[in-house]
Amino acid sequence: MDRYTTILYEIRGPVCTITLNRPDKYNAINREMAAELIDAFHRVRDEASVAVVVLAGNGKAFCTGGDLSIFPSLAEHTESMNWLAHQGYGVGKAIELCEKVVIAKVTGHCLAGGLELALMCDLVYARESAKFGTTEINMGILPGWGGTVRIARAMPIYRAREIIYSGRKDYTARDMYEMGFLTRVFKDDEFEARFTDVVGNISSKKIIALRMAKEVMGRSLECGSLDAALALERNAIQWLTYAPDIQAMMDTFRNQPDDLVAKQKQANAASDERH
Image (cartoon, rainbow, N blue to C red; front, top):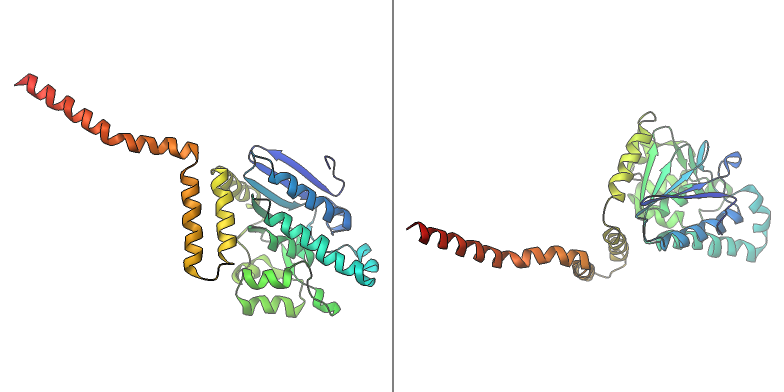
């Protein structure tokens, strides 16, 4: 899929931007967008020069959830299961396993499936005027692309429950930040500059170290004990340490004792000559 119809895919230096591009539908997710997101995140995983992926929305919304055109097909039992287990699960795993730092750039509305997309990302930055919520319970159902589960892992449980139970769609970015959901909130007139600084800082780091940090932090939550998680961390650090460029740096430390001895001998010889 070199040419997408519902998303934009652009690489500039170490940053890939994937933009939901159905602004007339407030970037609502249809089957084509789901397939294209899966393809794009699989594709960016293999882009060796990319450190960071920015997930953004074109127009007035980040994403307002599932497209209404999907719902008639969900009346059929198997199609409903596929939407959850294939498209929804597939998008989440594609983002999780893309091995890049994925940063959600939230402007406008971030509702229902849109909030679920944000939850799939590693970091979530929002414009102060953004609005959030999960509205599925108003229809007698629950978020089905991992929202009910991921939100309980992303913020204090009592606040996560309020968001799911209430069905509100008017939580402000400040509300969500104070409840523990967002990474940062920036004022509207400062947002682009502040967000660009954040992305620039993170994308300047060593790509393999970012990749390993993402994996260790994610997998450590699945470990049965703290000791198992610490072992995972130690192994990751050892693996990183033996990368060729790190070893080249280590060589300078290894050679330092010899250099110091040589310098000391030179100093002693010069002293003897003076006397």
